[in-house]
Image 1 (cartoon, rainbow over the protein chains, first blue to last red):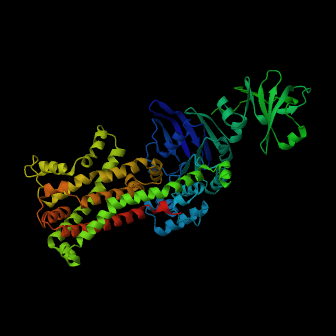
Image 2 (tube, helix red, strand yellow; image 1 turned 120 degrees about the vertical axis):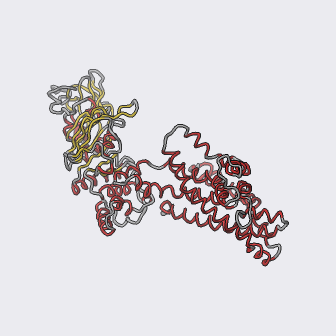
Image 3 (cartoon, each protein chain N blue to C red; image 1 turned 45 degrees about the vertical axis):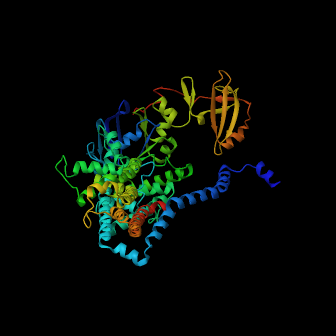
Length: 328
Length: 282
């Protein structure tokens, strides 16, 4: 097991950041810690890195008890949201920092840094200063710096949080491919469920200082263990005592058995999908359906139109049969 | 007509701001220039002119007089030494005041400014009372070079401390954490990551401290005893020349003192520039 966290608790004064948290991160996996701000995910990551000390519980890195080790001796690579670049050093010196302080021979440092700069696609920028790089480039430099010392585990704390949407998108993609090449056990902290689902193979959902659910992205989406996970992972329509994903809402003929009468209130074209906002006739319940553009064209919907909705795929919250096999 | 069109289409805020600034600038620039001339440039020219009252030969004679040379040398060497001590201790004090927590920290922090607030002659009196011939501590540095260094250390204490404090407080904690995660010990992190970030502030504090020390008069004049060739600093030597009704010599020595001070300040500014070059590259 790459990382094992057992019964870790952490308080900051009266505030509980982590309440008896246990997780396991398999060797070589890319695991996301997903949760809203204040859920304790960053604190957990910092405890794994040794930047924060847990009040109780233990941390094992590759089978070795690291609970009382300082960060210097844990063999972790850490990447911060705001890059934490050494501003007075060139890109080359930033990336080579870990090797230089280990007194590695100069030629070896040079070769290794060049190799890493190639890996993160910053070749040719070695002699620049961080202030001359874009945000995305700085973060790739920070990643190369963390990888230079061949860490046992790579910890990324909201690494794309400070970047604009397009660069985020690119870097997510790039990180996934990089992980396929490097295969170091990686933990990514994020509050963005799309990012977690796109990049990682396993997601640990956290809320209010606890782990809500652990699973593959599809598991969390299809079989959320709690109301919170259901709402946080993926879009959802909440009905009285039940929920349904927007893509599960079927538009049908109101006379068809199993269909309920509803009115189309608004159509929102978002390019690759269309949002159909509906209002159920029976009780005025509002919900929305997600349709592909060609499906919409086939149905020929208009605002104000009377349609049928089939909610057969709605699931009841806490229904053991429907929410099976998801105990964290 | 064109004015009307201008009004009808409001300019973006930034351009409007730029226009207003262009209107005000020449007047303001003129006022600043006049003020600086009056306060700084004219007096300097006056001293330079006065220093040549007895011709070039007189100037040369005044500044190569053994007593003047000794005084200039003493001021320069003592100031450089004091600045070096300040750079180290000032950084250390700033470190403790920012990074440590202890009872009475606010009081200690306020004490740093005391040498600034005290009239220098009062500082001199204080020092002679404490470390003079009648020292209650039994330690007398009166009429010695050690006494001069002590007085200069006293009056220049705040410069480096106050320059470093805000920079140290603003340092990004994550940068240190990044160094730790990469395997750097506390000392290595300080040496390779923190110190380079503080260096510009240390140098600028050191520059101010030097400027103050090299021309210091009030705090030194009592404790040094002003023994020619031994404890007479440049400022006191200049004063002596004035007292002896030799204003041309006083002016000549002043010019040299000024030139030396400017040379050292230029060197410090150069170092400061080098230590911040990563901020200027484009």
